[in-house]
Image 1 (cartoon, rainbow, N blue to C red):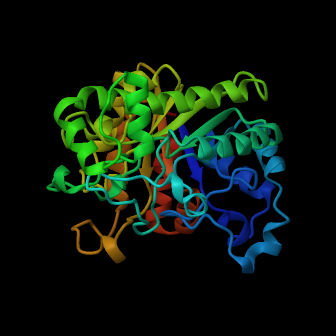
Image 2 (cartoon, rainbow, N blue to C red):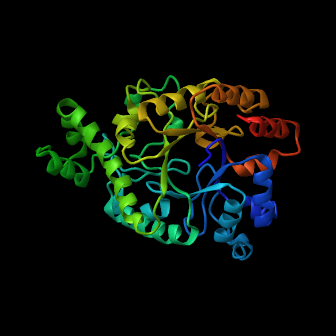
Image 3 (cartoon, one colour):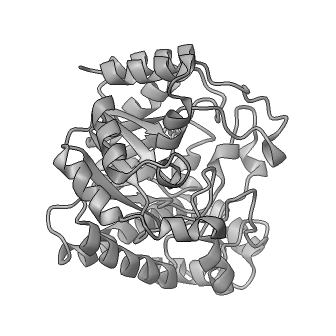
Length: 377
């Protein structure tokens, strides 16, 4: 696959709001020089997140006319690779319907929805079984080139971990009885699993490294199982994942200890690391996305793509007043793209297709699109 330039299609606005046909959308993406898309579909639907992915009732009838399999075929005919995307450890409706799956933090608090986010641990069998069933049907129908696994990690609203924040004030999941009991069983330990506060204290004091390794191994195991289950549905699939944009030094290796993403270990089951390098969200300079993506590529020894945001996000509600820039300029985007072009990272991905559609025809949008079209050409 050519990973030079891709877009995330996490909603259906191109069809419902911009009134484009599948042919028109595929032609436009080809005209822009897009080489791959990471896309949600009717077969693998998404819940609302920072993107309004769910279908409103008012759009239901119009949405019925969309044929995702035909759109995927049209993209393939234009040489555009298709990543079928499903979020694994993020599913608010599933969390609500399965209260026994809720994650518990080190203070004994059950996870609750923050803004749009509530996560599930990757060891929840009931969730994994449900997601594999969706993937089986989705892969059979779409025949994608790759499967993109979103939110494949331990819970945590990483977008709120900003410079100057203290890790000690952030939740770490999961110290539920079921998770601690599984940890005991797998490692032959006898940590008290009856009280999450006690469990967390004992684990942090006596088993921190083992706990981190075990959590990371559970993430790897979930992906390995998905790969095994889908092997009989479609051979030759590539697998990519949402990768947190953290260096190991960030928040004292929270990427492994809290979120359970050990890049080196994940390289055994991940072909492409999609790095969510949203610099405005995390209050970083525009040269940072290339640096963090290059670090992940180096640690993994695998292909990596670096996702850049196209507009400023996380400015309202609980996110207001945190100091994020209220605008992402064309110049910042250019600087980020230039740094990425000079890196060893395989390519760029833009979050999202809809944002580029909304901005095209304006000075900022056209400048961004011109830079993307010229990227490594």
